[in-house]
Length: 113
Length: 115
Image 1 (tube, rainbow over the protein chains, first blue to last red):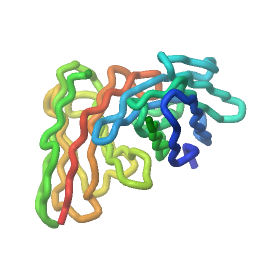
Image 2: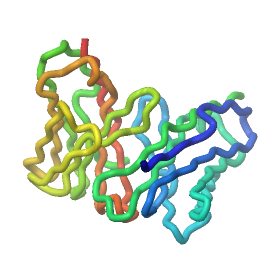
Image 3: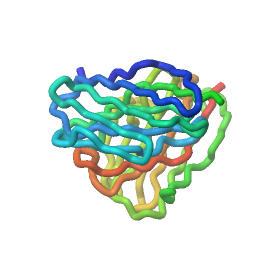
Image 4: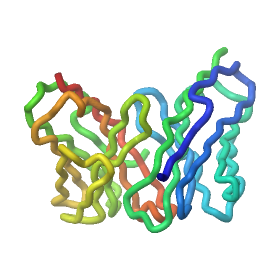
């Protein structure tokens, strides 16, 4: 069964600190992996999309890594800001699928002053 | 922000009543999707459309129907709402199919409560 597991479920860090969120998946055949940020009460917004051949991708203070061999991805946030408080969702697409992505349940990050 | 408007944004209704949620886009994207988001679950696909009058079921389509008569509008209908359909519904659009690296843009969500 295609699954995406994220850890931790929730995380609290102090402003200015770094953190890393994890994503493990069992989706096959793999097409791409996405990270989304979802602010409370808003729709998800894309941070990165990575294909099989990409192992690192950055978007400002966000850096995603992908290890397609171990089927793991991480999202590293550098120098966190209060505005980083949100849920971060890992999403995996299977090759050939036209309409379905497999969504993780998300990691809820709280950045405290 | 992608031009996606969902309406209504909030709705409270009673069991057994019909409900229609509307998604309107100004991006001329070919693909449109309806997802639901519930606590303890990832976003789950209800239905999607790959063109005008072309739709297909997602993983949680029971109890829902959709229609797309124009490129810009995608309607989600609950023929007879049940309490299990209380959820936040998100519309999304993409230019390419999601088997490619098509960017997926989400609306702001419609919160539906079925009493």
